Image (tube, rainbow, N blue to C red; front, side, top):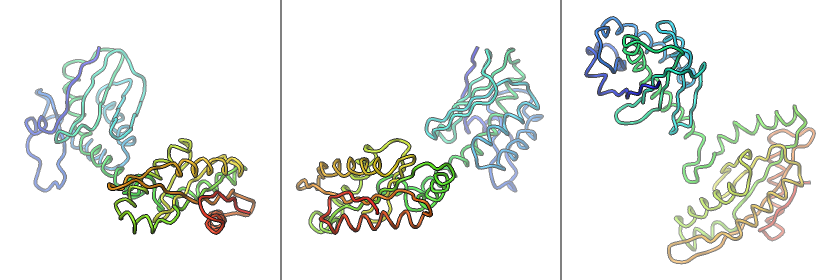
Length: 313
């Protein structure tokens, strides 16, 4: 049996006494009627404070499950937020469930389900609804924090990872490849004559070209490969578990796909090409030397006539 309800801030305001003006952050409380509101109020505030101690959504939900279990026995908890691409399972899903849609100011945070083998009493349901409201602000803050972190590692124009993300990931991937003796390759790509694109077709068309290239590269690589905007018109791809010959094949596929792109400038359409340098992690390599060798190969590709793939020596 599943019982559903929606937990919203409007319901909370109708049910609970006002929060002290000394409290800077509003504390969410119960979303259903019941005579135990006052007795639960302080405990709900206590739980809310505990949940506010973290900015990790999964940790918040685990703390919530622990605090709820101190008051009412539950066997399982599931939280799903499609917007945040989050799904947390704690314990086991049993026959009798309570399901809540968690919202704040008409914004849907996610779907919470708590279950157990035996049915919930009316008093337990009211208490669980009171406790569930303690999740609202901590989850909202955690999601806002996660979005801010993601944004700081994302290129705003193309939507792919930026150079800050590369600095975070490259050292990890080089260390992992060195430790496991697995191949790691790097592609450094530069759009040919990009200044001419801006000069002849305008900067908006240049932006369209950058977005088209990012999309084309994404379509040309595996989901496990990592794409970054490295500079103005430069892109970098990390290919884990990929030896030199495989990396050059991927690079050639990317180059060929970019060559077929048709960019719409609003007035006319134009084509672009790209040159690519390829390096593969060798004994004694570090992050700097791996990138430097790809950059040298890219320089050679441009020197040899552009729209080419060149592997590092």
